[in-house]
Length: 291
Image (cartoon, rainbow, N blue to C red; front, side, top):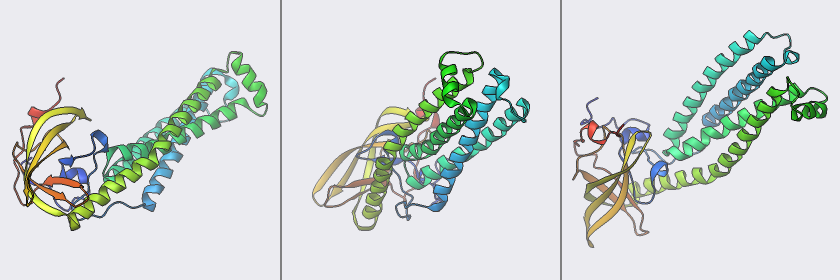
């Protein structure tokens, strides 16, 4: 697609309508909302995708622990050969990656925010690894888990897999708890920002403005984020608003591009490109990160 052509308005992904502007947030907290769509609400299919992500990562971690155990101690092997275990890890690992990528894309599209989406898919991923590795430790220790734990802590040869799996379990559990603790606030923030955008589009005062590009603040996933200044006129006079603009390298609008500014009496401000104008974008190489 030619970068000077407008994006398809029927797209359900807010990122297809980039750039995204924010006067209050930066980085991965910048939130978008597809024109005409309401703010996100809990969806069963998204929860189902999260449960699938948890299940496949738990299976990968459990089989991975079994493979590691089989490589360090013959006692760990059961009727299943080591080759079959390795093959199972490879297949399940591929399925786990597919499930995680799918969940991440769905979450980013629905929440309109990269941070909330990242926390949402990391929570079941880390929980699955912690549960699977923990189950692997329990199986490796056997019925006499206290004796098995003592042997592992004493460094008895053949117990290395127990220690490695235990470390993985603890690290995944701690990291998962940190991520899970941040998730509710991130989801609330994403929903509040989308509700504000939805309300301003419906009831806010609408003004025509222009955007003046500043310097690139940083790149997130090779996408530039710029400091910009938005200028618009209202019955109260001329206003200048400092904002952040996140886009991709091929979707940075020319300096002076037309934007729409939506405001209300509560001081909320939302900025977006004027949909009635055919915009011209900067050359892609101008805003590509240097090597």
